[in-house]
Length: 427
Ligand code: PLP
Image (tube, rainbow, N blue to C red):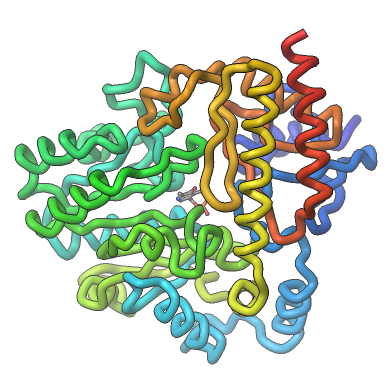
């Protein structure tokens, strides 16, 4: 029996997270990772642009992060009482770096961070409704488990990503199209006094990359301020990958709350929720407090050590310069390649993130625009890429990432391999 078969006998679906089991790759067993690479159980080497859905901003097994984690593992275990010096240092660093963060709490995942953002927004406002946007993903919990990658006929309706969610929870989440200021004004005109929070990925990377318009973000900020609604930027992907201050520093719009995760600790399990002190102070340290916040593993010493080591490297080394440059090289090279091959393609992204949609331009602004993407070709090219040792997740609309461990040679190989893969798919 293969390892994957053994896995399927004892693990539902054979994997421990949705979307780790990919059609055509259900027997994939990851044996080893290093830098920009991973190896499967047969010793096949892949240059990895999936990056574990984004956390590995420095590359896998970064030696400085690994050393810090190992050191913490031998000196400081989780005590589950009080606070550690490292947690204080991390909170000080996060609040100094990210504009909206006056106070911050650590979680173990991004989903917990977005869960608590909505809980405290409801606690602060005494309102029920939450607004999210079609195509944005904020984790697995009920209030946000709808309208991520919806089939065309489900767009514009409530489209839960799971069964088992209470109807009133789904009813309390309103879904709007991204980048549509008019829809935002309309929903506030109708429901403004009942909306506790608006949550969005400032760049919806869960569907590749939709770049927000300035008007859209400004309208959100204005309408939330007017209505007393809590504006939440979910920067779980964009935070620390696009810059030390997150996308909010880049766009110049400050949300009330921010959720973070992934790149903070280069792959160690962490999330964070921070923002206005008056909101964050509603979290009490005792059960039954104004808003309750807890987690056995929050602030785990090895994870906090990984985060401090990651942030130190992001601050002290030209990480962002490097990943932005290689990201631009990938996008420019791919765009030139598709032009040369005369294949309709929109190559877009931001910083270290790139994605090719197989459709005619211009760059998409809304989820509706993405419905023009040729999903079969999108997946087909990525499958063919694996034959050339390149791994971009072969699932529709998924983005790819460059890390600090990728090199110019890696980008050359990506471009060469893509040319071959596209020719195979089109043949
Ligand atoms: N928010 C965004 C934007 C994400 O992309 C994700 C995960 O992909 C989450 C929240 C949830 O984070 P986690 O998987 O750590 O729970």
